[in-house]
Structure formats: C-alpha cells, structure tokens
Image 1 (cartoon, rainbow, N blue to C red):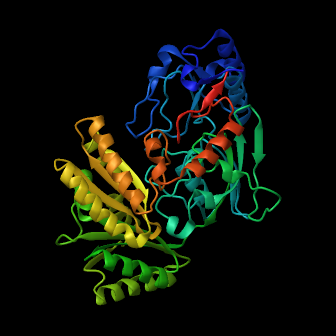
Image 2: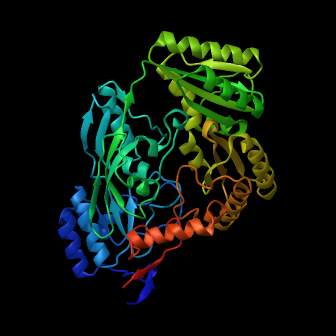
Length: 477
C-alpha cells in the first residue's frame, strides 16, 4: 500500500469512472465539458476555485451514495455543494475535483403539523421550508439573510446560526435526525422525529458542523415551532456599548419572546444605509444601533411588554431614540439595514468578511483593538463591524484590498487578535479553505489531531472536501 497526497488525484476522468458515475446518477445528471460554463460553481467568499472535472446532480439519496462509492473506489476527490452562500470557500472546487451538487434533492417529504416536525431533502432551501411550515401555522425558526438560496443540508453541515440564535439556538438545536451518505457508499439513516433518544451514541452530531468532510447529508428531520401571532421590531440608537449590554439584559428579562438583538456600529450602519439607498430613520447619528425583535402568542400580550421595555430603556438612558415598526413592511425596512451585507460585500471587493465570536462582555474591547490595528495598517480601507450581541457573534467587513496578499495579512491580524481574546475564528460559516491556516487560534493540537483521526476513520481515501478545515490528509492508492 502506498500513500500519496490527494493533490495527486487524477486530473481527468477515466472512462471507467465516467461509466461508474453515469450508472450512479444517470447520464443526464452528469455534466462535463462545455456544459460546466452554464452556471458558477463557487461560493460567495471570493476564495480561489477552479473549474471542476465534472458536476454530479443526483436526484435521490441513493444516487448520492452510489456516486460517493464510485469516487471512493477511484480515489477521486469531491467538492460538496449546497446553495453556494458560504463565505469560507469550502464549496469551491480545487484541482482534480468533481462537484457533487445537492440542488436536485429538493423535496419536502413530510410536514407533520400535529407533531411539529418535517422531513426534507438536503437541497430544500431554508425559505421553502419556512413558507411550507407557515401554511400549517408553524415556523422553522432558523433565519438567515440568504434564506432564499441557502439549503438545509448546507445549514446543517456548517451548523448555521443566523438572526434568531438568541431564542432558538444554532441549527444543531433544530435537527432531530439526519440521513448521511458515507464516503464508501453506505447510507446511514438516522431520521429520528423525537427529541428524546438516548439509544447509544447520537451520531448526527458528528456530521452537523463537519462541513461535508465526514459524510454528505442527504435528508434531515427538523423540529418546527408555532408561528407567532405577533412580532415586534424596533431600531434603537444607543449611546455606548455598556448601554447596549444593559439593554440586552433588560430585554431578556422583560421580553419573553426576544428572538433577535442585532448590534451595528455606526460605520456599518451608515455604509449599509448608503448601499441599500435608504435614509436613516433617526434625526442624527449614534455610536451604536440595536435592532430588536420579539414574538408573542397574541398582539395584546407582546406589544405591551415590548413598548414598556423600550420606554423604560429610554427613561434609564440606555436608548437615545427608537423607531418601532408599525407593519411588516416597516419591519422589513428596518431589517434591511442589517441585511444589506451582500451589497456591502459587492461594494468592497476584494474584501474579507469575518465571522468570529468572543465572550459577550469582551466584544467592544475586541472591536476597539481590531479598529486600531486595522486602521493603522490599512487606513485606505473600510472596517465595518456588526453582529449578534446575544450570542457573542461579531462580523467584520474589511476592504477593499489591493491584492489577495494584503487581504491575507489582514486576516492574520484579525484571527490572531481573536485568539488572544479567547474567541472563535468561526462563529457560523465554518473553516473551509479561507480559515484553514488559522485554525490553531481556536483549536489546539490535540483537538485537531482527533479531528484528523475521525476524518481518516470515515474517509480513508480523503475524497470528501479534501483540504477543508485542515490540510488534505494522504489518500490510499
């Protein structure tokens, strides 16, 4: 037995592999040659990618498993793709890779209104499930700005967070069960629809957040919640970070249905308003802005608590001014200030979109240090901060940079600083390719070593998303 790095994998598809892949997914679901130019095969990160050798578009979980088996036998690396909304470069194909796209696994197989559960295929978009649940008076509470494009399999593979983690937790908290195709072609069906199941190891957690490196999620069993009868949304101008912390503490205590507490520093707020072509709802500027959302079973119950909390916050000087949405349209207008991220990313290319986390009480100190360091080193660039204060998730858009080398230097500055603050270099989007070289700031050698052992156990040929999270392991030839 000889060991070679996955970069040695074949650069062209052999006739035998083509035959096996066509048998696995069907000739119409195997794209190659000129057809690959019909659409992009890279995510939103701007990270390097190359044209894949071929693209597989299986229509069933069984076809996914057969395709993995074929690639396993031929030691051919695979880039697994969902909605391509990631910012870590994990879905971007590298040299000699075949793309496995899950977009055609788009069926909502079951929606149980009585049990408040759903069974969906991995390619179902987040918005499609939200809309289907709403018909039954239910909601799937995960929510992201990319809801119309991101897919539920990818949400689980990256353990997505989003806007409502404060109340409902990460994607991990919403997954009841999974079906996973393993690299050797086995289909592991664990589609539990119960919360309580202590029958041995809960293997689904091995694959949630593993970024497609251990197996390919094909189906998911998900928990739903009642659709709220009332939703309150407000934008607050806040004098400083201690006031924002006090407002968060007050909101948690007085708003039982608090779902979102989004914090925006002035630079981000002003740039976002310009990017979406909207005027600030306030008469003058503020150092910080908070977007609050709370839900309740009835308007009478929710609105009184919501308005009373804001009045109290203003009386105590925690809020300088506030705008309360009077309709869904006005709520959407307020959320647009927070969700104009895609416009900002386009305006600042090439830029770095940081997604880190830090203990809540240290977030402002981290922002101050990063601002000082980045503005000193890169005075011509913008450095825009925003985040989910309730869960310690800080986002930063920095750029545009004149070169990818300069961008990489800025990344090194940010991640080293996050490590010193005992935070995580990835709060939501995963490690992928972009953050791989900085993993040591958040995970020590023992943890990374165990990750490698798990990867080697489940994927001995190293075919699934090689080089993501950590450098590609050797493959067996």
